[in-house]
Image (cartoon, rainbow, N blue to C red; front, side):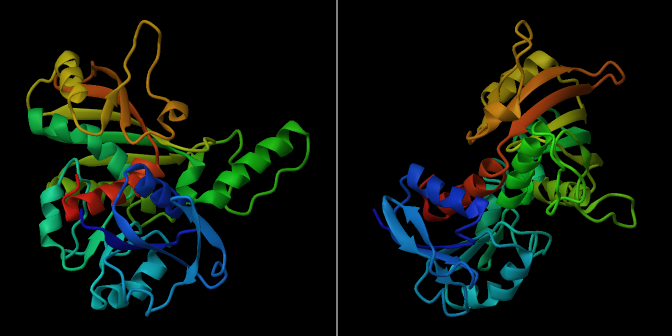
Length: 335
């Protein structure tokens, strides 16, 4: 089997670390792994396939001997180095928001629109984590019954803001338990034992940046530019894995039983819907899983063709690293 030269940009970060672990778990054929990060991380080491690899400084020359570069270092770095990456002949798979809404950049969730990969011109975007986790279970229902409207509220974990945000939640919880003052540096509000509107700027339309991403990106992924979507994004004191409460309205009636049957066969989905034991998707159980957990599948009594669902998915995996590696596998024909 052919092997590939892979660069991981942001290799020391939370998503970068998950990319390395996912490449290992998937036995992806890597001939050379190049960990890249900022100057302050250069010289550190990361583990890959039992070896300690030195982290190299990210610069324009770093892509000269790379086939695929998986970026997880933020939108600023992605914009700064995209041209150098593509000019060097490497395909850029980008986890940031930098290029998601550009018409010439495919925005891909492999369970939904893998065909869009054929249109790439050197850059492929990984969608927002909440949009991915929302889209995976809704796509097969959309194909079966035609979704006319989506209403979704997210319960987003600290992992969505990175490793330092997760550490802040842990340190605040310890301080609270010890009766000590709580300090905050990453989030604008106390995250331990609290919930608040997603920590992104509010746009003129009254929606925060995260909410607008979910709306715009879901429409692009589904190829439904006018799909009505109402979204509220909330940060919750959970370390890892996002959850979402969803209501969908469909063109034709879709019973909970039919929806459950469709979802039980859908790629990337695991049905967790045990009414007897009151056991439904939880971020604790979604953490570390590639699949999106789906449950609370029930009729909406306020509308004749409407269903309610509750889902949980690992933001670092399906919401980022795993989706990027899936794209890589599709590109090389390994999936």
